[in-house]
Length: 116
Image (cartoon, rainbow, N blue to C red; front, side):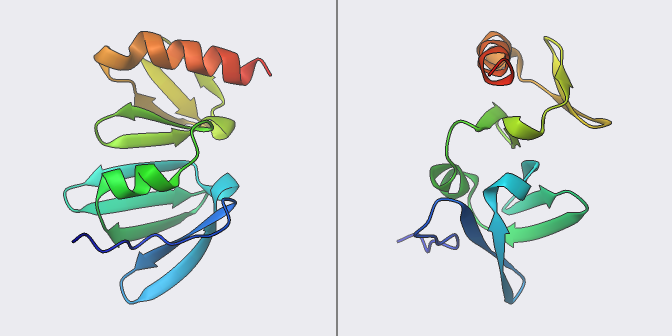
């Protein structure tokens, strides 16, 4: 049985365990989530939370859109995207590479989302 470490009844925030502390993180504050082995790094502006949990569990908790999976280990909040090319997405000055398998799909999703 897999223990869920992300618990929320409302969909505007998630609870993330970082070490022994639980943090309430609003979805619109999340820029990017990256997987690093058994750990997730959740980036919220200048804050970073490290949580030991499965990437798939986190993906199940996130609404899509605005969250989109760029590669096996990266999920971005499309609301935070400032620009993109066929091969990468930018949030401010930070570049995130799009998986070759997902490049067309991601480009279409981003064009639709950003043109709203």
